[in-house]
Length: 305
Image 1 (cartoon, rainbow, N blue to C red):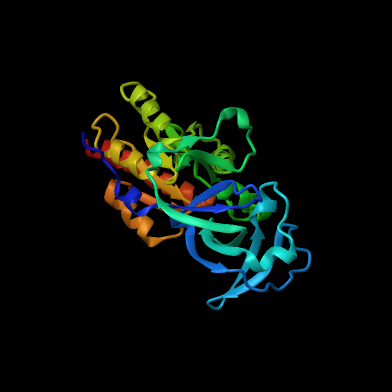
Image 2: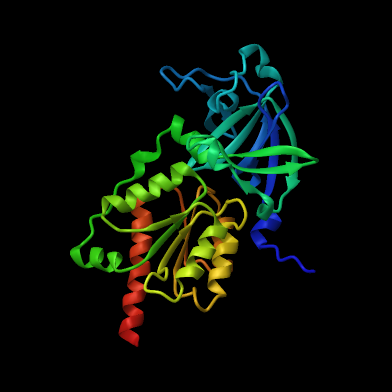
């Protein structure tokens, strides 16, 4: 039996670390991680969020330090414990921050298809986006987007472009599907489209999105514009786009990958697997403009036929 692994999954590992005294394992995808350094002395920031312990200078860049344990609801790390902690420097949502964690465990290879979504019964505002196992221990994948949104609200960069009546009607005539495992990202996407009165469907992961698209493929509700996150439990965004591109009943869809990963490498891979565009979260204006370009391709194809 052969196993198909996307190019994204070959490069995307998982950084394991602990946040509490019980050594409970948490993780984030390695594509979000710039580097890991031992704790550095911080400079205090007046009137900063209570979970921001200060800033540090790393390679000439001033980086805020967030106590990740406190941010997700555990006991804060005390100043007396700082010297034994580590800083995980991330680049996510156009923001470079350092998350202070108690211990670095290891970096492991990960088949993202094996990650299960967080249970629905856990609630809407938990910081866990997926669950997997390593050496029989449960590993919880953290929703970095949701965590950052609580500390740095991401709505300052959500200016919606003014649409002409023609543009709006073109968009409203199309079937739009949004796919993201992060609750805050789904809210941001939905808010952006609701502000310009564009209807849409939404799925929480790649598997359910692919099933939905196949269900609607031969109906008037066939998806015209797909906007998907990259890092998701089960079928990731790269694999979803690859499956859509290679399915003749689905590949009419204009495919946009929309990710918190700030990397040219992500953009290159997005093109390789069949995405028309790759955007970094979250700029509502850029997203709407990309969707308008998608709508224009349907106008051009009708004119050509």
